Every structure is written in C-alpha cells, then in structure tokens.
Length: 335
Image 1 (cartoon, one colour):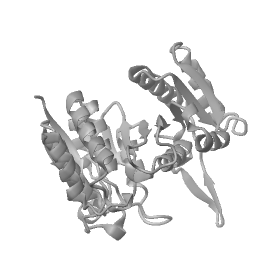
Image 2: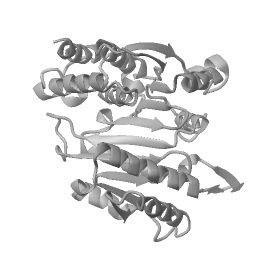
Image 3: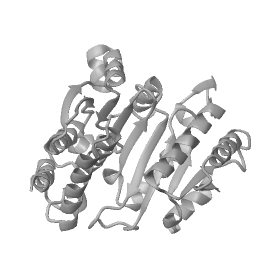
Image 4: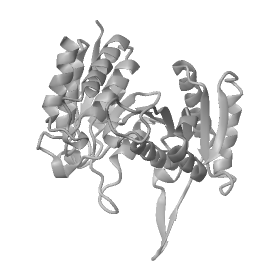
C-alpha cells in the first residue's frame, strides 16, 4: 500500500484531542501514513513570532496534503485570521463542504445531501479594509474573472465526477450588478462546457429562505467567498450543527482538510469533544489521496456507530468521551 506523508496541524482548544482521535482511526484503516506535525496560529506566534511559519507552508507544499484542527481567531482585535492567511499563502481557491445528514442524529432534514463549493480567495471575506477617517471604515470587495471562472469550473467538474445533476450559483447581482454580475456571467460561460448538468442561479437572500424551506431542490451550490461562509454554516445547521460537517480547501499546490467548527476552549482538555467533523474531513482526505477502499471502510464504521446509537458524545445527547467514540469506530473497522 502506498505510503503518504501528511502535514498534521493539531490546532487550538479541542483541536489536539479530536485530531489525535482521528489519527488513530485513520491509522486503524491500514493506510500507511507518516505524519509531519506543524503549528500555526497563537502557538506559532509565541514560538516563532509569526502565526504562519514558513516551515508550515513548506511542509504543506512538499506533502501536498494537510489535516488541520480548529484554530482560534480573535474577534475584532489581535492577529488576522490564520485560516484566511493559509488559504492565501497556498492559493487554496476552492472550499468544499459536503452537507449530508448522519443516521440517528436528530435534525431538520434527515435525507439532505448537498455540496457547497465556495470561492476561497477574494470578495469581502478577504478582509481588505482601512480607516478612511476616524469613524469611517471602507471594506473593498474584489471579484475577478479568473477566480470566478476557476471556481465555477471546479463546481461543474466536481458535479460531473460525483454524478450530480445540478449546479446553482448564488449571488446578489440584482444590486451588485458589476461584481456579482461578473461572478454570474463567468458561471454561465463555464456551464456551456457541461451540457449534461443543469445550471441555474438564485439571489442569495431568496436562496437562504429556500434552503430552510425546501433544501432538497439543491445539489451543488457555488458561491463567492462571503456568501459561501454564511450559507455553509446555515446548511450545517440543517443537519445538526458544525460538529457534523467536514471541510476541504483545495488548490493546485495542495489541499488542507479541516474541521469547520471552532476551537471550543471552554471544553478543551476534558476529552469530551466530538471528533466527527475532523474525522469526516479525514475521510475526504483519504478519497483525495486515492485511498477509496479505506475511505469507504472508515465511513461505514462511523455510520454503523451512528446507526446503532449506543456510543454518542455529549453534544449528541450521549455520555461517551472523545476516545470512547474513536474506539467504537476502530472496533467496527477491525471487526
């Protein structure tokens, strides 16, 4: 079996606990992995004087793949988002978030199965802002033909490879006629190359209402950065929360697979965090590496544990610790 060297970023708060549990499960699948541990964020700032050390970037570029725990980003002060910085440094232009309900988890839409493809490099989310005069701040929204075309093509290629039938662009081109208008124009230009896949669009506010009322009408959704950030959390709420939603950041220089939830410092160190999101991201990572059999086996083991419902973490109404949940999945893998 092929050996993979993967950059491992344990993260902050509950990160090291849920990442360690996931590493144990992935290794139990039989895939031969060598982990190269790196740090970013607050820990790196303390040790190296920068939140994103060159050694970490070099490691990801060298290995092409990283698994990353959640990071803490200060709100309104302190250092800028490390997640944003990492995506910029590696040009991880596509943020992919599958939204699929898990068995035996109470949620609004137990049959839901859709995918969000979010442009990851520009728009308001890039954080280009400055003080014009005291009391007046300007944020700059930049949309380019290159980035819009690239993300549209990624969404259609993803749909084709996954056998999905429809891609929906979400926008506010009725108001932002130039910026969101360009995004929409690029989307429809690319759609002509994929005649077998239905292409449509929805204004973002209406799309959010439709997602809450009739989400089954959507399949693959493609959005610019800020809309994608908001809608992906909304969709996670439809299946039970961020603790159950995986995430991948894909670029030409590499891919970073991560838990999309926060670092939950209030429960760090207690061994009670749910590792499902980072585990599901690890399953996406195995598929990215071509380890389809191992990915299927890990996913089935996880699904079996959810279906039986005997071992559940506290956030899902159970009493299992992080390691107990991981052990139950490993038992299924070995059984």
